[in-house]
Length: 122
Image (cartoon, rainbow, N blue to C red; front, side, top):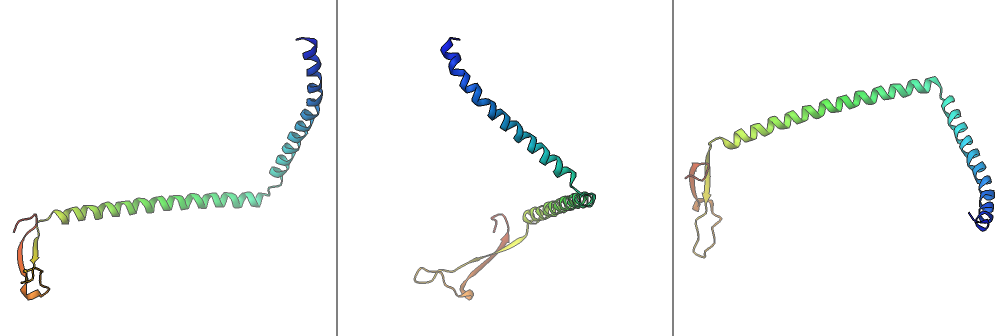
């Protein structure tokens, strides 16, 4: 390093020393605050905290069992729906009879009913 560079670095080093001291004191204060906070927790509060943890675990278990039960019920309903949809059940198809003006008539007595099986067969 040249003498000019050294002369330039001296003020930076001199100004950085107070910053290091301030930073160190800040870290000491933060460590002291953390240690006081841990020491001030009463045993009764710790007991309540453990009770809450146990209760949350119990609720989590209950919700998991409910979710599994609900999933099983949905699966059973889906199986029933598939079975019902695949059964060959007679269906009634109502075909409206066209009127003179080209529109289908809303009169139920004029409608033609065709009874057949599902699957498009008549």
